[in-house]
Image (tube, rainbow, N blue to C red; front, side):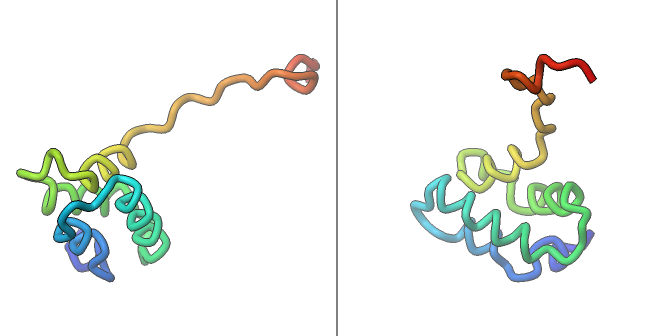
Length: 88
């Protein structure tokens, strides 16, 4: 995937240029980026972005946000309450 496809509005690029950006601000930018992504293949886009912007930026909050987005979600757990105890 091309970098222009992975970051069509340049949101991630700009987040790496903002000095003193916080993780909360990076999460907000990430949501904007995800909503503007033209292709549904976000893992490939995330890998492209991390490959381009991530090297040498291990301590940047956007690198942490992008890395967390690539991680598998936790396994669903049974919820408590009456509905969880009833047999199907």
